[in-house]
Length: 317
Ligand code: BT5
Image (cartoon, rainbow, N blue to C red; front, side, top):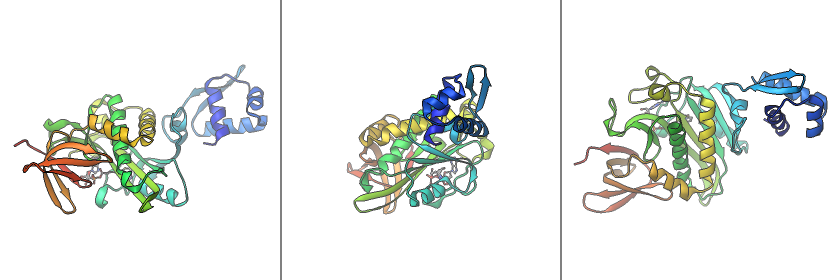
């Protein structure tokens, strides 16, 4: 949404305000105000016009302008009813030079998990990818994945779902007693971070977050859960706003992101098996080290730092 339109919307939210007064205040013509009001109505905002002038009566339920309205973070939202993969669209935007744009979709038809695994993204979920140009060395980018996991967990908790994080990027519900799936719980959300850069400089990062929000359990793979399954359907607009606001605060402070991750971890203290590119590491997960490595104490007492891999929570020996 451009700045004038945003200013018109903010004024209407505090309205009623007469059109001519608003035109004077914003330094634009009356006709321009009228055009912005019509465009906002087309975007689904309910704008009344009575004796006192224009007033905002209702905000659309979901979509780009709805999420941008009242969002306390500097992201522009590009909304799609359906898209192949929000990460793929975000990468296109990144190649065109975009920054701080969030691609948001109601449904994805070709979304991906890590290692090109399939990701189910039926209508009703929160599927989003943020295009970022962080001033970070490439080695610190994993902290952004942890920040996204924290932001997702906190948004879920605010909605009443007791979510926790399994290293590095799975948001789970139900803990080790959850039925139906591996130890650690049922999967509520996953994160896929992709980047382009040189040895010492990040060009762009795309952080893709998929959260099963208003989705029925039958539409999800086995071992998955949704906010709807846990507590009933919620307002996705507020959910996305909270997620992006927390993420925005943490991306500026990667050290704090790692600390926040520790506090929400289901993995620390667990016996784990991490499958890495060079083999499996088995032992107790004792810490997460900046910018996101899992520290595993193996049975012979050695502390191993694992930077990437698939982590499974094991039964205690
Ligand atoms: C992930 O991969 O968990 C990362 C998922 C990232 C998805 C987002 S959605 C927005 C953005 N656009 C994209 O195209 N992707 C990102 P991984 O850890 O590899 O887990 C993948 C596995 O999770 C699959 O093999 C399934 O077993 C399971 N799975 C698939 N869809 C799921 C869902 N909706 N909920 C829970 N589990 C799912």
